Length: 294
Image (cartoon, one colour):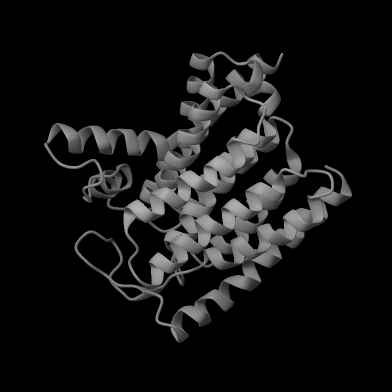
């Protein structure tokens, strides 16, 4: 790894670690708090909004790399919309349909400027939008969403796209120190959806040469594998709810992390099991990506 990437990683780690306390202070000042209820695991009022530092860090990263990666103008604008939509929801509930519209529009900014075919753009649009929400769905136990994102960002490094992967994983690690094992702050909807959007949008932008020559079924397989645990958990949850006659968006405590905590009686074990599963699925995604690129 060259010196620039090492410095990027170090700066990202310290940025994440030092901005988290600022977001915590703001959460206390403006009462941006996550309150316990029957659907949640935690039992104490906990500050939300740790995604604030992640968002600000990404904007700074974008300013530095925009000359060599002009497409980050679209992803930075879109990421801002996603984060602010979730951050406002952390303060005062926002209609899920409004947030879905924001996610679709943000995904459109990234996708429809690409050279992909129309149908490929549609697949990318729905994958980015769906996985953005899926990262929010798995953010129900300390450290899970951030660690899954870090694994995904490192997988992007494995296929040769270092600038984003290194910076994103390092910044997330800095924030993780405040979220795991005992959470002093939560990502909130703004942070969890931001992580999902950043990963998916950069996977599409950086992987454009591979996606452009992939058949539709190959693209779908690639997206399922790179979506990993968040996508798997969402598909299982939606299927279960529909079969029971409920809305797919009906909230419950039957996500994979809930079931693992019931079985293992350990939050740490649940996070490690799901992180291992995510890494295994990602490894298959990396293999498929490498085959399509060759």
